[in-house]
Length: 542
Image 1 (tube, rainbow, N blue to C red):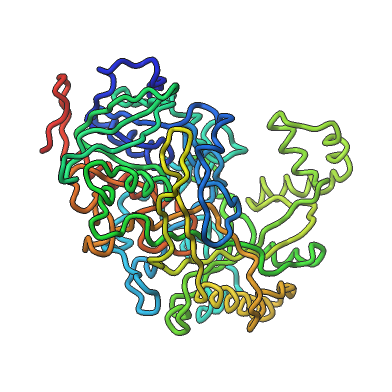
Image 2 (cartoon, rainbow, N blue to C red):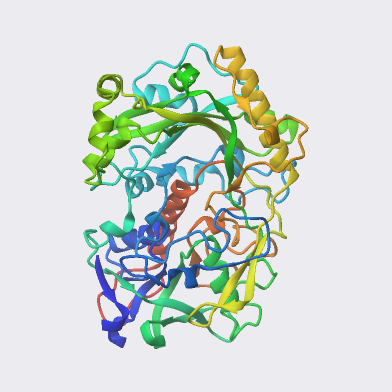
């Protein structure tokens, strides 16, 4: 895929059949899929190959809601590859229940079901650096991995097993996939990426029903115009609504905002440690709920075993979705961390001494990894029990435009993120049941943090997890959302949105795999309506 700087491109190079705004996993997936059938795609990326000194000024937010882990920054990266520049690579699939209308969860329900995404799962897994797109959650994992399920099964009235899969970069086996590093090697002759091209306005016809072009601003403040037949906005859960709201020259309230839905229903995942285990006693629990290495046609991939609330319990007690897992916190002198730094070429002078200090641990780890296909044993400072909880959709949790502006004069996003009592109640209930389940299984007793104890009113030690979603939610009725079931903006015939901002609910799981599956599905939708046309006139809608 050709990568160029906006400053080096003439006006003739600012035309395409499809214009994609944003070069993160969603945007690049759409572009790659469309280019695979010969459609001419232009991707616009605000940043360059590396995060620059001025990014904080562009990434700033006006936060007036609940505290966030990075109080003054949006979740995302102004760089080629977008949020994949800093993501952790952890992926999972949404549950059937997450798509359903749940009477105990306000504004729940997608206009599609889980089956609508299943046909796109394997293509999504390949984009994400995963071994499998389906069949790796709950009891499906055991036959997939060639292992026997544990004899001490979880109590199905309370929990179900859940597995996350860790992305693997095709060029670096010690890292998760970084999309930006692979853009230039991607075989997509009809796709181009323009870096240092910040979209500052979406220009529509006078009614706001058709996008004519987008305004891009480059270095020095020079404003250019990009023309296309179809536009895909893939700028993330904060910047996507921000750009729609700021594009108000033709329609005062912003694009797609006839019913004041753009920017509402901001959700994230609240996550943090709710209990701890003493490292010396945690071995049986780590063996029961640990990491596994599984072979696939795309190589070896790591899976993390945790637990999630059963659908029956959620219904019975009006809880939202929630998962828990054991998080190992390596000690400063962990030999395996030293080995990893050495293999990555980042070794410190003391790493050789640390490795030699416990060769037995290294030999045991090599045996476990190569023969047993399980996680490496680390020298641990702590073992945490972490929880990640779904958020209840709330129309008052939202993104607006601030009176403050970024260096290009665009309004900053004003973020009013809100949390709910239902989430707190769910986390405390899940933590208490985990303690009971560990006792039933004969595992060491977790030490619960005081705020997570039943009946506590202290603030839970949970923060956002950089998964903003819901701000352009999918809905069958335009009065209740921003995009339709095909991710097209209600009332705009050629504007689509890719990313977690279209999620009506977010479940408990990291959003990237679902985002990519939706992006593959969107690409199929677009190429069904566009045809390859090699002349200068561009595409014609079918």
